[in-house]
Image (cartoon, rainbow, N blue to C red; front, side):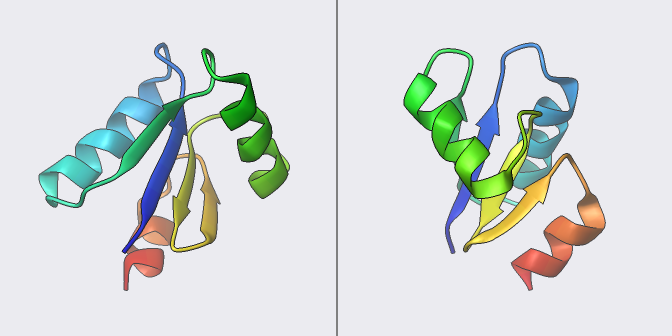
Length: 75
């Protein structure tokens, strides 16, 4: 399972998403798109969106913190 989260430091929903994965002991890779232009571009290319969080679970892209879509992608 591969989980990537594109975030910014001031994003409350990003923090909720990270806490959600931590509570479930699911490892993830986090990229701070406010500091990494290349990862910001990667995020936009994957999602078509500038907003965060963008969550990539095994290639399934979820924009925002949507528990139902996250759980569906995890199963």
